[in-house]
Length: 279
Length: 268
Image (cartoon, rainbow over all chains, first blue to last red; front, side, top):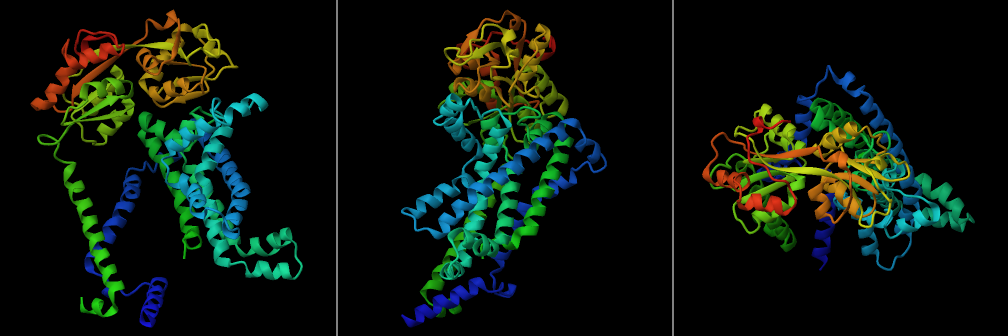
């Protein structure tokens, strides 16, 4: 019994500690690992070698691309803001409250991360479309119809991006623990004061990382946006949609836009990797 | 191995899992790396077909072994072929995309016209927007959808609207005709221009629009290889020869007939 406990402790230590020297890893494992890395890196290389570097400025300067860029910025920034406003309370509830069915709740939160975006878009249509479960009342009471509007694109992007923010912030809250919060409460701080002066400052890096991740995901959103919000220049046609269309019209332009999207995504991940990776 | 045994049962199990993971990875990578190259004999006949043929393809190849259909917008299919996607037969929804495939050098067989399709002014069942004429596509108070001009149905719609001199007030330019028909049937859009066949399949109402009757699109089939093996030729004959199973399915779904003239003999 004692031996087992000791073994499991040391096992944990190995997992958390620094990487073991390569000599102790089976050679096959290392080889397959690098094959996998190649699989992930190859498409990036493929894109780079086809990149029309000299024509890049003129391709990206096309009015259609600039218009899509504008829509993309509006949509992704609004979606990221929505993720913060809605996701922060959710993350706090998930991390601090005892929930009845925690596994189910967590699965619902994570679902948009694994759901095919087209399915997400279809589900949004059935829920918030003109004839949808909630959408029909939005239309009747407020005259609001989300599909085929920029607001609809924001909803679709926020739907798929929200889990990235919530998961990042919830993990940070759990890691920080609630001892400091309790100490503050004992010292007489109210619930809001504790939140503003103790809880949020301790997880500031995670807030930044979660927001950036959600923004990057919203920027790259394609399927849900297309299905729920459609595709119209200046209104709902974002950069990923423009890329798709450009692929059929002018593949070089598609490569140029893809480069920009990939550079942004890489920049976000390289900057934030250490902060959002669960430790 | 001995070192692992000393550490106890827990670790031995881990070691076995690792071996299993490695062999699974090798198994996955193995066939994937060799499979792409050989699709001549032995492999399935891969048929790339335009979105509007979804149901026809389903009927024709139902229960038939050795045929794999790939359905997408014609221009997507042509781009995929040009990028080296493995396929044996290409069916496009207009002549321009087929000509593109020929000039890309990705199609070597001679394209044959197999059917025609017409655009219709379609609305959800019951026509909730009260659409009465093609000119209603300019109404600001309606949600109007078209296909994107990059895909054949959008190209045809643009030609028809230009010819009719109609100012369009579109809300979305869908990337394929099926998506547009679905959004109409869900009632999310009030009106749109889809193919007659898609309107019929999606149960849409149609509004008379005589301006559209002159604008037809042709469906073309071609073998990717200049000398198709017999099983590939069999698939082409199914569509190209009058009275065969493919042709019957086409007409059953509302496509208009053609006399299988080669593409070059047909006005664009």
